[in-house]
Image (cartoon, rainbow, N blue to C red; front, top):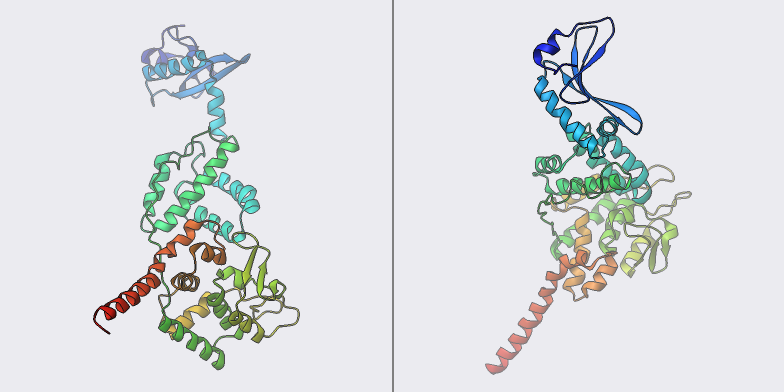
Length: 384
């Protein structure tokens, strides 16, 4: 066994069968000569009673000295009790991000998340994560990859942060499933973008315009009585869109809506007289369990966004979203002196921090009371 050099490797004879010529300097380092004449470096060792071989590179693509250095590194890891051939085999068979993403959607999201959340998770993966690194081995995805994806969507900070959250959960489960080492979540320490929360509330004048428009739409037949009722109920109850859209007559119980399921679980929502009156005026269709009945027999209205765009345009409220009706309900409650904790219960918030976004509105009645009091004191001092 001579020491492998460039000249030695290139003068090795080509035989009918491939063979290995080992190096005299590094035990286990050698070069394989194929009948085609191609020469490739490798390292050979024994582990667990078996002979293992690892390809290092083709002669010409790397030099013999570079191959020898790599062989020493691999043999050093073997001496330390590791099995680099097994590590390489595991990496070669490791799943990609897209395949793990599908497992995540089927085994976790479909079981633990609501359908609306599941749709958002799939959207984040299919539109943002997969195109960027869907073919990456799950074990190879690092923090730089995640940061690059997050930065690429900086113009949409909300979406960038939601995608980061979905991926963080996915990589946490990768550790549970044994696909990545513990504590290797690459989403950690990637800072989220600041999100500007929209706080759009309808004023009394805007509410009047909206009410007149809804009445006109119903009278003229441009929108169905069910669509108009849906928007009235959203304003009068503070419910989420999905809660009204999927509301069934069986959930209506006197002065309450008894929802068996919602974004935050089962909810009992008070029905004030104005909301009860809306429900009492609604016709019930035979065989249709839904309050907001759709055009198809037995079905509900599936799209309220298009009707809302028509209604808000007629009312001159084109910047108002459907969710802003819920904000209007909450802001009026706070401005009229209702405690934040009570507002949170009415809205079905599980955390008080979610409701605290409306806390500053409580300053309005306080200011009004202060102004009235100061006016009275000023009048007394001036003899009025």
